[in-house]
Length: 199
Ligand code: ITT
Image (tube, rainbow, N blue to C red; front, top):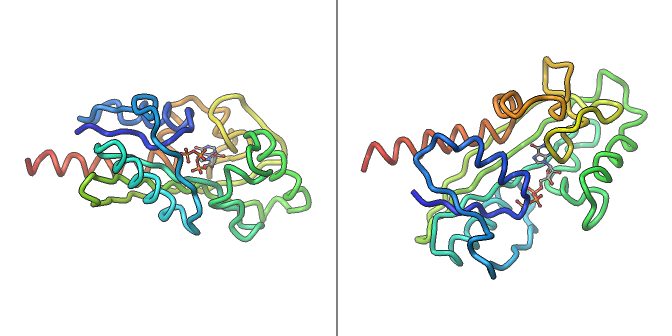
């Protein structure tokens, strides 16, 4: 199956390509389809945004398209930044500004109340308008200062449950085994295998 990745986030492209390496799919990116329009992410849920992004790109490219909508839900902030994770510190904010804002907002939150989870919803849309979705979660805690240089986004401040290292202090393989994106891609893998078996 040919799949075009409906994302402009280079770090997501890197992670997704790495995790689907062994799947029977040929991966394309938006670089292969110059002129593909941007999609406004105005959904209230990860699923709405993922479906919207994948459907628009599949329609334009006439190819199955895979979108990833993801973010961080923090318990002490009533689930924020959630679907606003990419622009938490404002439109065009970079990863560092976003996690610095998060650490400021969390500065008075005690150790026992720093729970959070990464959420990833993948949507695989087909040119005939069918859409399949796959979800993944990674539970953990928000630290008090950034640690590590790998990964992206909020990785330097996120400690997956049971670990004393942040995602940004882990190698690729370790993050992929624990991450929300790894879990959601596991669902995609099972789907693709089932489709292959049928055909
Ligand atoms: P596309 O919509 O083009 O895919 P985006 O970066 O705008 O790219 P999202 O709207 O889904 O993507 O925002 C996701 C944000 O959530 C992302 O920018 C990170 O800040 C954060 N995030 C998602 N997955 C993450 C991960 O594995 N590690 C750290 N932060 C992550």
